Every structure is written in C-alpha cells, then in structure tokens.
Amino acid sequence: MKIGVIGTGYVGLPTGVGLAELGNEVTCVDCDSKKIATLQAGKTTLYEDGLGKLLHKNVAEGRIRFTTSMKEGVENADVVIVAVGTPSHPVTGEADVKYVHAAATELGEHLDGYTVIAIKSTVPVGTGDAVEALISKRNPLVDFDVVSLPEFLREGFALHDFFHPDRVVIGANTERARNVIKKLYKPFEGKTQMLFVKRRSSETIKYASNAFLAIKIHYINEMANFCEKTGADITEVAKGMGLDSRIGNRFLNPGPGYGGSCFPKDTMAMSYMARQNDVDMTLINAAIAGNTKRKQQMAERILEAVKWIENPKIAVLGLAFKDGTDDCRESPAMEIVYNLLEHKANITAYDPKAMGTAFQLLGDKINYADDMYACIKDADVLAILTEWNEFKSLDLDLAATLMRHKNIVDCRNLLDAETAIQSGFMYQGIGKKTEMKENCLREVA
Image 1 (tube, rainbow, N blue to C red):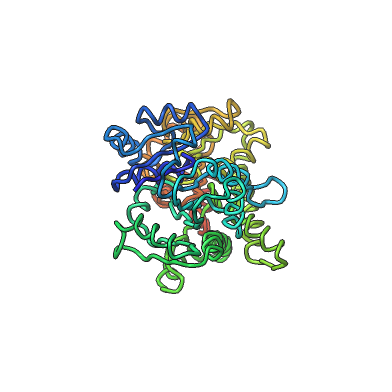
Image 2: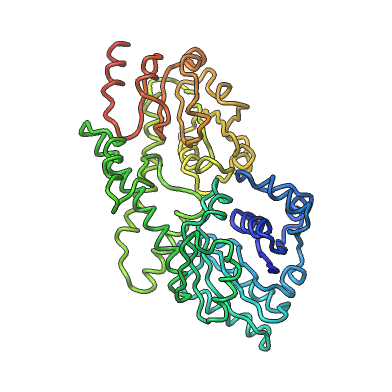
C-alpha cells in the first residue's frame, strides 16, 4: 500500500519505518527541513532501540522517503497517518490540536482518489469530526474517511511494540474505511486483537488507558510511602498484588512519579475534557496532584541526605524520563533537577542517551559527565533517577572510593540495599523502612 505519514517524531518515525519494513511504500512529511535532510541520509533524529538500523535499511532499499512537501507525501496515498504533536495548554491542560487541524487543512488540498485519514496523534474526543469538516471545507469534492488509529507504542520499545502489538484499536464509522485498515494490518491478522469501534470510542480508549496507568503508578507510590512508615517492603507488596490477575504486575514499580510525553499530558487533557462535560474525575485529579508532589518529595530526600554539608555536590544518574529513550519531556528526573536547582544545588549528571536532549533544556545550569564514574567522583550524594540497566552494574566498592561522602538516594530501587551498605554507603531506596540505613548511621556515630 502507499502510505503517507505526517510527522516524524517519536510516533511518526517508528510507525513509518515499521510500515516500510512490512513492504509498504511510505513517504514521511515534516516541516522541519533539517530533520528531513538527516532522515533522507538514512540517519535517525531520535534514539529508539533498533530504529537507526531499520531506517537505514529501508531508505537504502527505497521503501521509505522523506519530504517537506505535503503534496508529495499524500498524493495517491491509500492511507495518510497523522502523527503530529498535541501539546498541553500551559493553563488549562487541554490538548492543543492546532497541528492536527493545520495538517488536515493542508492535506485536504492534495488528496487524490479515495483516501483514509488515520489519526494516530492523541486527540480530544470529537477531533475526528473536526478533521472531517476541515478537509471537506477545503476540498468539497474529495473522497475520504477519517478514522481514529491510536498509538500504543512505548518509548524505548516502539519498534517492538509496532511489530508485536497487544491490540490494534480502530475507530471507523464506515465499512469502507474498516476494510482499508484491515488490509494495512493484514500482517498482524491472527497475531493480535483488532478492535473496531466507533471513532469517538477509539479516541476515548487512548485517554482512558493512559489515565488508568497513571493512577496505578500514583497508587503504588502512595503504598511505598505507607511501607516506609510501617516496616513493610514495597517490593514484596507489589509482587503479592501483581499475582492477582485482576491487577497484574505491570506499572507496580515505585519511583519518582510518572512522566514522558503521554501520561502527564493525557491525564491533564482527560481532566479538562471531564470538566468540559461536567464529569467529576476525582481519581485522575488526585493522581495529577500526587505526581507533582512526588517529584518534590524526591528532591527533598536528596537534599535531606546532605543537609549537613556545605555546598554539597549532587551526582545524578539518569535524565531521560525512562530507560531506552533520549526523551526528557516531562521527565521526573528533570523535574527533580529543576527542583534541586531552585535550592542552588551543585549538580553533575550522566545519562547514557539523553545528554544532548537534556543540554538543550538545561544548558550550563548543571555539569555533564562522560560516564557514571566520572559523574560520582567527589560527590556527596548519588541520586539515581532513571532505571537504565547500565546503572545496575555500578561497582559500589569503586564508587565508595570515588565519592567524598557515601550517600545514595535510589529513587528507582536499582541497587541492592545490603550490598550498598556493605560497601559503606548510607542507602535510601523507595518503599522500604530504612532500618539498615539507621544501623549504618549509628555505627558512624
């Protein structure tokens, strides 16, 4: 099939490359000429495991190309996938659909023959109707359908999720459009669940899913706080909860809060839509407020660990919002760093993939290290903020010789507490009563 993809970000690019690998003829459109030039050369503009290799392969074999021309991207296409950003409004929290509307208006000029417009961007309920109206107004004679085709790609695992989806949700209001999408996803027939629903239901499913997962993360973080006070171990509690098939074991890892380009944005948008429809979403609102407070709490823990040291050096491992990506949007790690900077903290940071992205946001407000050992040298406290596997292999005996004071605040529970204490550290994890830390402190005293 001939596919046009509008937008080459964390959704559009993996989707376009994946569809090309399945044998489709794909043209990706983006208004950023520098980005397009890089992609035309077969080089990726973002980090996603395996993406660079697959991109280069499909560019070389001619299955995917890149352009700034909407006309080139959508003419004669069977399906046009809209994958542009829908950022949060800074005041209301609603999803800003101006890029979706702009794409719809422009592509309406160039559609030729029957085309299915598939909206992958996460958009408010009713956006499909608006896109339909915009295209028809621009080109009253065009033959098309608009479907909702929400993405469920996890950053860091986007290609895996593309080729191994746990479900494909299609919001289509006509049989003709459903048949086109069935053809597009034929390679997955019998391998995953394909759910055909009304367009507005599909738009809601994406928000409902992300909001639920955000609530689950907020809940386990509250339980972690409870465990710290009562002597329970959140790791054991989460494991016991996860064995219940009604709950499941995913998203039960306590930490510094949820982040990234989806959960914060989508929970706020869901809350806004609820208010607009006079629906009280108490759980979602509590998760939003609790998540903001959570990152403040983590910053306070780090500062508390070195409150007795004048001008302490804080080593931060992890700046991306999660492992496997260079994305720092709404990263809990970054929010904690911002909070620490408000207290005039002296910070040196390291992240395996997100250093460049973080520098664009932070500039020279912090120092940047070439590796995790350079990061912790002469530090007074080590804060682990992103769950990169690389950090699990930290040589604690070596770290003890490099650091000025042996303090660890492990906001991801990556390190083994007993091993850290045996290496001489005062260790604080998440969701566990700090008896061992207290014993260590008594010995020092």
